Amino acid sequence: MNAVLLGYGTIGKGVEDLAKKTKGLEITNVFVLPEFVDEPYFTNDGLRIVTDPATDIVFECLSGTEPANELIRAALKAGKHVITSNKAVVSPNLKDYVDLAKESGGSIQIEAAVAGGIPFLDALLKLSLLEDLDGYEGIFNGTSNYILDNMQKENTPYEEALKQAQAKGYAEYNPASDVEGWDVFYKSNIANALAYKTYFDKIKNPLGISRLNSEDIAKAKKEGKIIRHISKSMQKDGEFDTIIAPAFLNPEDYLANIPSNYNAQLIYAPSFDKLGYFGQGAGRYATAQAMLANALDTMKNTERVIELKQDKTYNPTLIEENWIVRSAKDLSALEGFDRSEPANDRQNYSFFSKRNSALIDEVLAADPDAMIAIWR
Ligand code: HSE
Image (cartoon, rainbow, N blue to C red; front, side, top):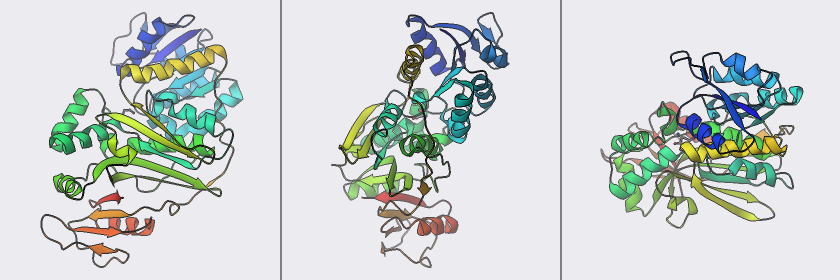
């Protein structure tokens, strides 16, 4: 089959390398942005190559939403098999892509967009065929895990740990997406769509790690907790809920023990209780192999079809967790805290139980910079 490649960065180069080793697959053209040189194997004309009758497969490894969205839509309308690693473009457009693929006889495959080298989406698609899954939880952002692990184990300052994650190629072009929860927001929207067969992209209050400071790390150590950034998602009786937040975990929690930039997930279902994954969620070859695995499915006609026909309801009070809040503002007027520790310059922590999403809204309204985390 003939494939074209959109984007020639970390992942695009990995796809090119692995495609060269794949029998029956040839990359005929690479779209690069107009600021990069247009040579015979490269082109600035993305629309031409994704609609070319000779093209079967389109590997999309651009970052950001445009021109990725325009090119994916054109490719799907032309009946191509689109394989993408780009969660930022898939999250808001997945429903349209699935519909376009269905109309045109093409396909959309997105394994690499969530948890890179881990076949997590494949597992959700496969396991949800038999029964309604109870949900999943996991670490989906390698950059955040790398930063937290280094801050806690090596006492590395936040900025230094972030620089290291960027140098190692884990972080997004704009790392705000990693540390402010947006990367995991996109990934959770996608995972929910596949797990619950319902398209919804408005999970409330995704919280990242950027508000954690060294006092919080010290607090966790003092209380015997380990901080990780997690997404937890559950469904029950036609409703679902997802929380994206830092979490102060007990050391025996599976997710507390995930080191460095690794990702990990647990999937919950009535028949098997829980099932765990661990691996590289980012990086050139980890991500590229997920895209090639999708291409091999296309070549053998064994693709998993994404169905979004159900209409489950988002209920932001379904998941019950306890929470810790640190704010420089006086939050004593807010009702709902179980207890507050004596306020001083160094720590002013308050705690509340259960999901209480209304209180999270109120805390953020009173102090948009408040540190809010799950407390287990
Ligand atoms: N920036 C992402 C991460 C890359 O750190 O996990 C993989 O999506």
